[in-house]
Amino acid sequence: MVSAELGQPEATAVLETEADDWHFAAWRTTSAAVVVAQGEEFSSYGEPSMAAIWVLPHESGDPLPADGAGFYSWLLGED
Image 1 (tube, rainbow, N blue to C red):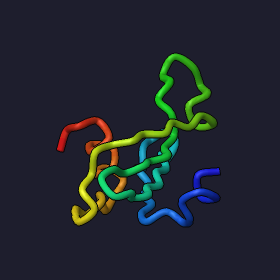
Image 2 (image 1 turned 90 degrees about the vertical axis):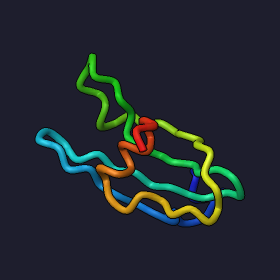
Image 3 (image 1 turned 135 degrees about the vertical axis):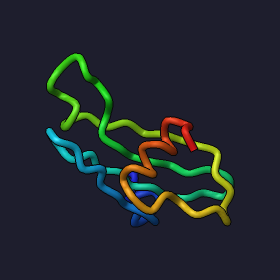
């Protein structure tokens, strides 16, 4: 659905974990990034089938994170 509106993602990444890998895809707009990632619902086993859409301030010239760990830290505001 997002790709239909924004085209192919500019960046994709995978965060390898012990249980399941977490997948991220990001698109850039003029002053923000749109990220589709697996949801974080730790109270059930449904998180691999859930998705979250994040809209983050991100200047068009700034690089997107290059790997899964970087994406996750960026989404949490740790960068």
